[in-house]
Image 1: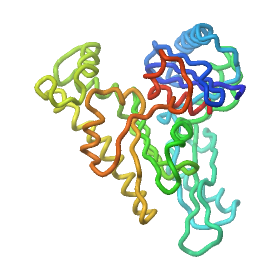
Image 2 (image 1 turned 30 degrees about the horizontal axis):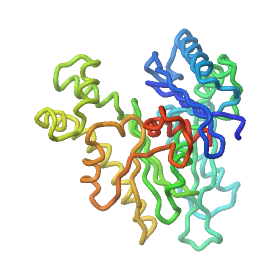
Image 3 (image 1 turned 135 degrees about the horizontal axis):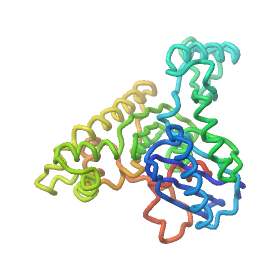
Length: 334
């Protein structure tokens, strides 16, 4: 069993998962009462988060103190980059140059990691080297490390959400028939095209459940709490509330799905003769009433399913319907 557990600190909730082989030995979920990312919290808010984390760990009976924790995509820069065939030193230089041009953080204030995910056997003049690059502001990683240590935990590593999502759903993909994973959380939506071993592309949109709720609140002149209730009850169901909720949510959902379609087309252009085999919707957005039928209409030639991070795992009965919200935590623990 891995000595460490996975910890996903989201803007609306905190989730932990500890997996031993095919058994989920420990799960926990608690509200993030601050309603914001850890890196955006004041010191007093971080202390409150630490107390919530300690209570959750105690209530779940978690024994491990070694943790792999996620940093949200909104706080990092991550991208699959393509370069001509070159040596490793040349590649390092090319990555640095590319980051200097594109990363919205000062170069001396970031931590950079990268891994080659696709490399031709020899230079042909046509083949590209694929590299997954992540740049994290040092102040962000320092904030996470300090909070984890205050909670009495030993950080094994910090990683952004993309690798965790890729691991969580890799069993249902192959490198020649990848899946598009769409993780819609409270503050944003992560999208990846991934195979069993390869990550082909990724994209983050700052549009999630909270944005949908605000749209509903504005459209119906409702307080946020009531708008959230309306959204959860009626969602994207065309036959509910005379279709009014569907009309409100459709433009923003179409915006997200449109970006997913661009990723699928780009993959097909890069890998002729292949296509994304399945779309997997996960995160809290997967519970939106009517979203799967609507996505199936939007992508008529591609299967759309709800992603269950517990698929193939033994898990307590009371957690079985919560696989979509534990996707990142389970991927971190894998």
